[in-house]
Amino acid sequence: MSNSQAIEDYAKAVYALGLDRDGRVPSGEVAARLGVTPATATAMLQKLAELGLADYVPYKGVSLTPAGEKVALEVIRHHRLIEAFLAEALGMPRDRVHAEAEVLEHYISEDLEALIAAKLGEPSHDPHGTPIPGPDLAPPIEPRVPPGASA
Image (cartoon, rainbow, N blue to C red; front, side, top):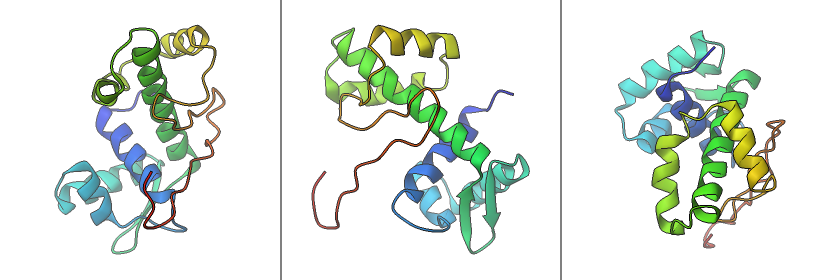
């Protein structure tokens, strides 16, 4: 089953927002991260729940199911591998790779993902130093920045 770009973006947003917390992510935070209205976010979170990708409880928030986490980690892996490829193989400046990867992350095949990873020697981190999920899609150990510190 292929996921839409919106489903992938929402799964990725919920995953990222949920890294530093236990429990559910408020739907308002998802809306703010994606630049959409709370009503739009709520409708999409309900769709993720219908697809079995999220556990959404009105007024309580959302968490990803294992299937939803897998979708998020796949998109994150694509994104970070693309960033690494653009920077290392093509010499694109680091400050430009994120925007390009945001677009391309939804459109690469698993075959192309494998080729990029092999070409780069299965990198463990993107050009910004952020861990890349492995081919097994196990969650990478994300660096946690203490409150008040800079990344």
